[in-house]
Length: 123
Image (tube, rainbow, N blue to C red; front, side, top):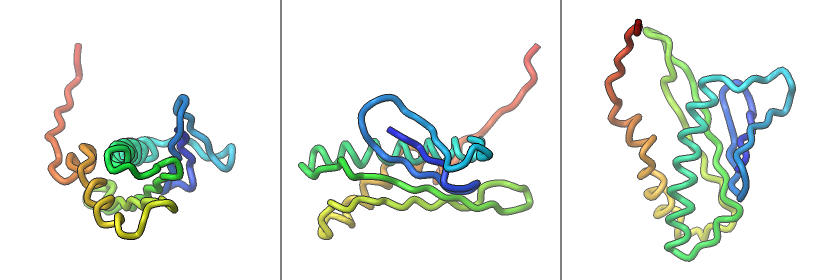
């Protein structure tokens, strides 16, 4: 599986066997916490779609995802994320089902129902 940093606000995940790698188009680009956030969403969504495809007997070798994000203020945070499913071999009549399956990703569900976050300084 390979994550490619496309910009400061977009990543691409390509599936496949082997260890996870993170690459960038330029040496100046660094893997930020926001890239990590998007990578978690992409990895979860890919896993759900690959499992769905296996059960539906649909090839998923060409399944890839792009995840982008934008910021909002008050407070400064990620305000929106978009997931693009890139799957050339997916039959057109299965697109709606794939979209529904992608929505089952636990990371997506976590964004929809955010957890509480506690922070403390430990001694």
